[in-house]
Image (cartoon, rainbow, N blue to C red):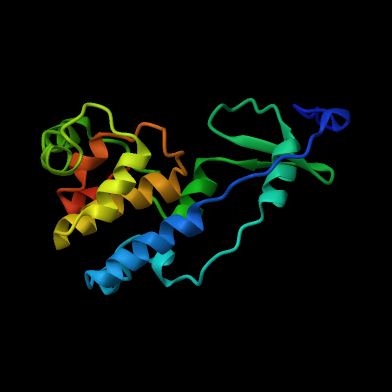
Length: 188
């Protein structure tokens, strides 16, 4: 048996908050209002817009986290379930999210895309650090059709795929890369 990071005798009750359904509901509602939902259903993130509302179990996730074991690979999580160690790594994340995690980053190509600060200047007071809650507010208050689309994509990545808390800083480069939709969807 693998050694649990939290031994059975030290397990504790907790509530796990899952906000993914709230995030995707807000995005769907805004995209519907601005006639962007059909476009969303054709984009590489279409699985999130085509799927019925998902009900995740916080209790199940909490119990899974209590069965976490030490992994030799820092890029993956391992859990002791039954008599086996199960792993969750980048491959599983890519499978679930449909993100292109296998590509190598072309630094020169993407560095040139990081220069646009239009969304940050227009909707986020041109601040150097933007928190997830501020991105959500900008998305919900935006009224320009194309910018609703771009901010919605950023909010989907930040709030759903990365599951950031509202006080967590977002990846600022995302606001620049989304200006070029094709490159945004091809970004590793």
